[in-house]
Length: 417
Image (cartoon, rainbow, N blue to C red; front, side, top):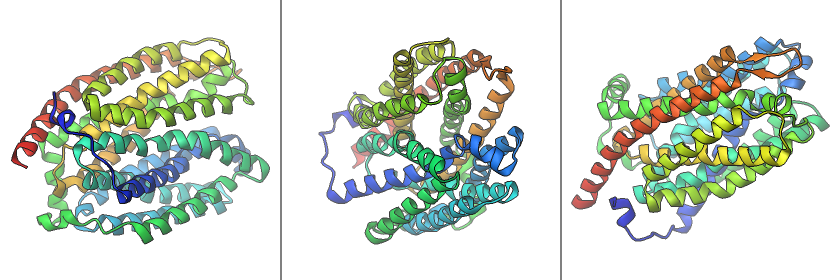
């Protein structure tokens, strides 16, 4: 039994609960901004006279610019108070999203998405660094479980509301919604979040380049980076073609498609915190392994589905998302213990960058595998599924060794503390 499971349950303070809520809402705005562009394609392409290939660039430029920004920022992120760093990048993200809202040409929107990615891509790493700074290891599953529900919440609340506003007014409306929500979250961060600068007392590396080189050359960190790359592969390969596959291959109409997302999202929102608590109680790797098993089974079933009743489609989607969420939540909690406090910001920033870049590559790879028939059906989606299964099994092996290292580190820290 691990040291984390032997500890008595802890009670979160009011301030800790506030921080978890703020981080979750912050992630909600970032993820919604990233996701909302895809379903708006049917409106943006004719409005701005954008070809499918150009729209693909609009979707992927965010991920690639976010990845580049994370790498460039990694040498600096441990040299500042994390609250100030968060506010700086969040302001940039809001400005970029506002530019998306007022864009009136393909070139303008492309630059706006690039700006948004440059700032938004770094925020996720700061969020996880803050969560790791403020919460001890035995609580991180619970924290990550709530923070990671932002993805489900963006599907349940954000996308339907954004699409409703887009249908009622124009495709610009969802971006104005994100700007308004983000400003409100930013005010709460400014007013209530305390400075997060304990890591500065441990004499962080003053040379950004040296700090970056140190982070990318530490063997334990390299294990975490490799696992992150493989973890990103699954979601990014399936997600870009999920809606088209559901409509044209499985036979769910466009009118009923939002219902599938809503039911899946609600179930994921409920499951997320439960998965986080299970990670803390049973062990992060145990929950990760269970999530991998469920993911493998459901990916094979999902990517081979033919025309099916909507109830079946909902059940398959819910189980698939629970499997993926179990992997992401437990992996986030587990890998958070890899870096030392003085390297945490740099590690998280590089890890986030690798996730974004590998996700963009995975999406592009999936685009090369699948083919679209004249009637819109997606061919070879099952091949994408088998690639995801392979990456999932490889990640399971890697996380086994990471878990052994982390549990040893946590046990030593508990004994010395």
